[in-house]
Amino acid sequence: MEIVDAAGYDFGRVATLVLVLGYPSERWKARSLAVFLFIEQLSMTLGDLIVIRNTGSDVTRYHVSIAALCITCLSPFVSLAIAPLHKVVRSNGVFLLARKTTFNEEICGTVAIFKNKYMLLLLPYMFSYPFLFGSANVPFPDILAIMLYDAGRIFIAVMSLMLDMPWATRRTRSLVSLGMLVVCCAVSLGVTAGIRSKGINKSQINPTWSALEISRYIFAQALAKHRALIYTSYFFAGVASSFVELYGFWIIGTLTNDIKASARFVGTYQSVMSIGGLVGYQLVKNIPHRYTTSNIPMYVSSALTAVSFVFMYFVVRRISETNDWTLGSITGRDSAHAENSTESITIVADVKYQHLDE
Image 1: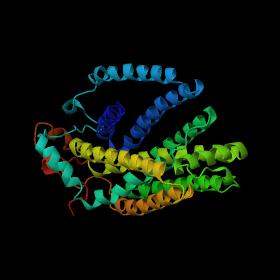
Image 2: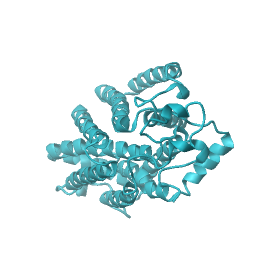
Image 3: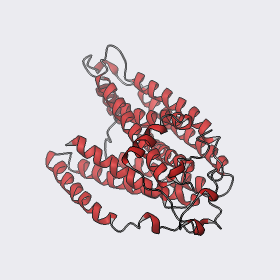
Image 4: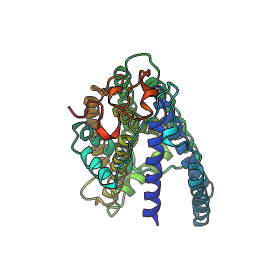
């Protein structure tokens, strides 16, 4: 049942993100993503608060699951209110274009993504941070921790404005935002490392515990002795996690304006993210105590995250103001509406991405 639920969540998330990336104009993509991610986190927060408020009983979890299922069943009816692709016109008069493809064409197009050097450079970024969260897997101790985590995620608005507002070229905005992301992640990891080294009594650790159980014990001890520090870690974890997701999906939005291409990129991104979180959780859960301390998984995942930022830098360097494909390649009844626009569009028939076929 959990597998079906996870698959449904990923499918729905990809579909929604494709719309969020495809429908807004270039100057609204980051803010649209921020709204989506904020609403998504709000729903998760409500679930966490309900569970903590009722001490996580099985009855409460059952009722929450039923409520979530009922809301999910409404989704198909809500989707009927979404405007069809061919009827969507951006504020600058540009129509959204995407050619219908066959199942085989979609499979071939998805496989082709993994042959692209820039997409390969993005893979470590997609994998590393979910792996980091999966290896940490620290539950919220109380309601205050949840609220501080969410307060940190509100700062997603700062990065969305940094990416959308035309205060500099898009490449410059991307580089500055990447710097913000690196700093936030460094602070979050630094505070977490500080918690783990703050005189925790490790003599009480059972040799049979897994690294995951050791991690939870350390954070429980830290909460008792260094409450302010651990609450600070939840706040910065919220800032870092929101920045990571927003930035990654926004970068995908800069690679192409084509709906079909975005779907392939987002689907790949979400799949690799899920794999990263799963691998991180399972590895840490099953590492024997005699082979590692609880700090080693954090060091490994932190190193992977740092390497992913280096690879991301090389992708960001190739970002330009618009996609590099001209409106002259567009044919069909909607092309006339785009001729006077300053925004370039691609069509999936050409399978073109910004800089990605060089």
